[in-house]
Length: 167
Image (cartoon, rainbow, N blue to C red):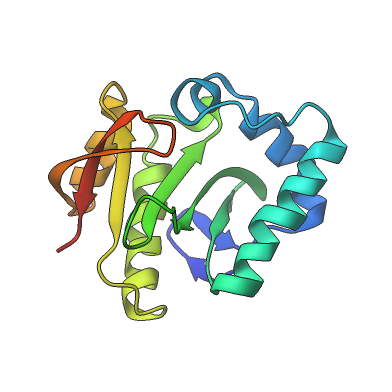
């Protein structure tokens, strides 16, 4: 059952059955380059990621990363949602999409809807965004959904990240 419906997407919680999709997404070139290798080398690893990461976050924090499902194809194509990172004072919005769906507006469409859901339903304030300096695509989406760059921050592995906020 979708949490959010947009013009072209259903946005819903991930399920164990989505492991093959997560295996593909977490091993896509842009994920590896901009987010990092999560060590998901088998479908069993992906099941573990969904159970102990995504589903665990829904149960303990009340939010997490949600899958974006293309309505027309009834196929998961990406994720969008929230994380609470130790080096940030508040949650941040994040997103990723399979390569064949990049540059078609899906990430923007999902991000706007998820940001509204986080603000209006989950009462998350402020909502931050982070990205590497080199990731111009993510930076543009964060700006387009109304976040403003407020500085930089070091990640837990000492990488300098651009910091955005909706306040």
